[in-house]
Length: 394
Image (cartoon, rainbow, N blue to C red; front, side, top):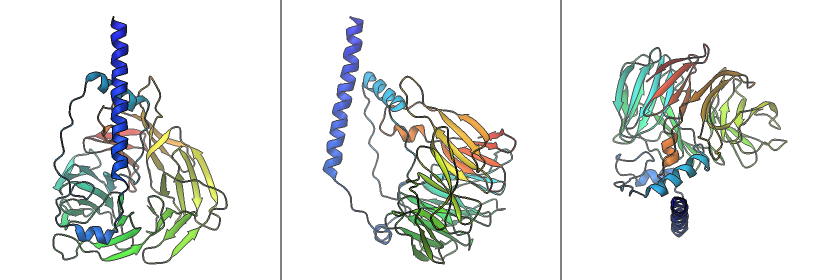
């Protein structure tokens, strides 16, 4: 009977999925935890710049075997309506604004665009693109598995520099005091590694300095004066790369933040938790809360400039409903300046479904024009949040 066959198929799919899940759990437990190595140790082990996006050597990827349609359908529903999309542990840097420019990471190359119409200015192949950032002088730079490239504010071509080690959970930052330098934060041992763009070197750019930033329990943020701030086990820490470190202990429990963002003042920041509460904090005795507001959905990405905050929001999973994505730009008090519903990609059945769904959900906010961008390797959309309209799609 048709009804019996339908019930049998669903039961078969769920049974197979349960068996697969159990097998995966057993395999994960069998592997056990891996010991973390320090940045210098990992750097010493690296022998060639032909690396994957995580900075580790990787063999050929095996083809995913086809699965029965009933299992695929069950997994698609599970991914779309039952499982949450978790934000990355560190900010994903795939888009970055400079003055009248936008740098876009696209697989093994970067595309530099003008921001009036989004037309490309130049493209540079760097191997797998690992991260991008902008400096205080308006220059943009990108780190790749093969090499890096720096795009000065008015140049039409980038100047390449040797490869820089970049591992999972690393973040790239500009040196806001010296535009000739930049940083890579390596979370495994809490170090800021400083590099010089123009250093004479072989296939790898040498480390100019190693600056301790130990004790951070999440990704650090860079404040307006170039200092770094992060969560610690007892509160917050603020460290100037060429200065001292100060720790701050809140007088009230503030909870763990999903992301920290710089505020307009040098001694203030915004802390966003996973439930979507945004707190405006001052890095002073007791860490006073200057203001707070609630986002309408859970944050996936967040950014700040000197006048607004920007968020990519994702709806919580709900049976019978598709996942929804939105872009929200607010002032520092939480008043909306721009709200846009973003295109949602249906969740596939394969194990990398979350990466697939969020592939083009990277966020960038300009500090030079009232512009905000959402996109990734496949496309980029740029809005003028001052005028409240889409400027271009590419």
